[in-house]
Image (cartoon, rainbow, N blue to C red; front, side, top):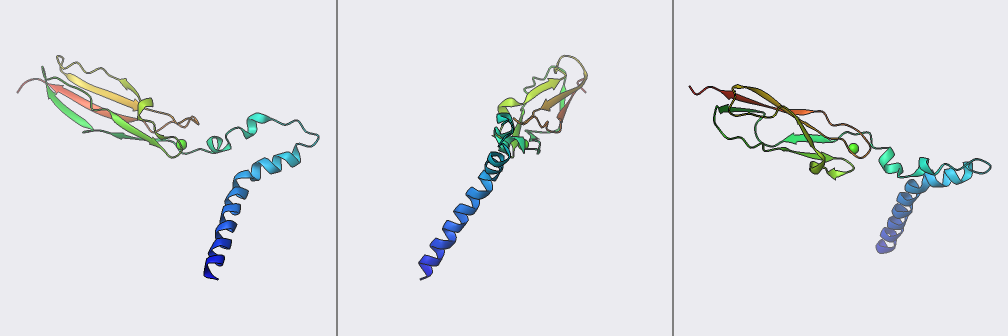
Length: 133
Ligand SMILES: [Ca+2]
């Protein structure tokens, strides 16, 4: 008896989920009677509803202190999105190009957008190249 109850609840749950997922489709079929069906509107409704921007996480320190002549290799950053998952490969690194032979403060920028076009908050790294003390 307990098993049957679990089965019924499970089936109900599955149909409930299917119902939520296809609601848009069915309502569209109804409203499209006599109307022009616009395919684009229903293309990937999941992506269209993605309004959460991805998050960039810096690898290593936000500020790097170097001495003139040091070598520098940027450790980069990672990016994840609620819908697209790991989008680290899409990160665009910009800003200053670090010249370790020249004293100065260099700011490296990291930007990325998800498939839906939501831009992440820009993340920066400051690299300070100082004279040998
Ligand atoms: Ca997103």
